[in-house]
Image 1 (cartoon, rainbow, N blue to C red):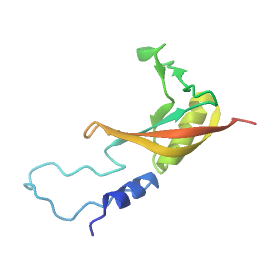
Image 2 (image 1 turned 180 degrees about the horizontal axis):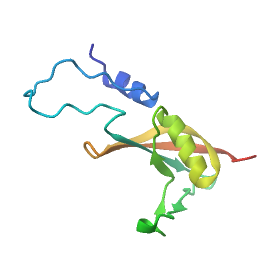
Image 3 (image 1 turned 180 degrees about the vertical axis):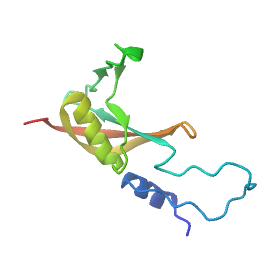
Length: 128
């Protein structure tokens, strides 16, 4: 069964995987195709604006990029949907709770990673 692009994106946004076809137009000795959620790193990134249209940025604490400014982002954990991963990363990195409004961009680096950039709305501060 072949899925449309919209069906594939819906499955990925819901935390699922896209089924792989049973046959491939490649020689048998070539490596197996990528298995989504198993061999690719999924990254979520949140773009949050305040009521003055200022962008929430954070300073990186990791030694290799300390002092650099970034949007809140991180890896999606196994079993998490993209939205759950986004909300968790924003909460862990900024202490803010958020609701995603829309998917702004999808970027990929081949077999290395796929990054989903969301526009999100700040809803509360953690613990309030």
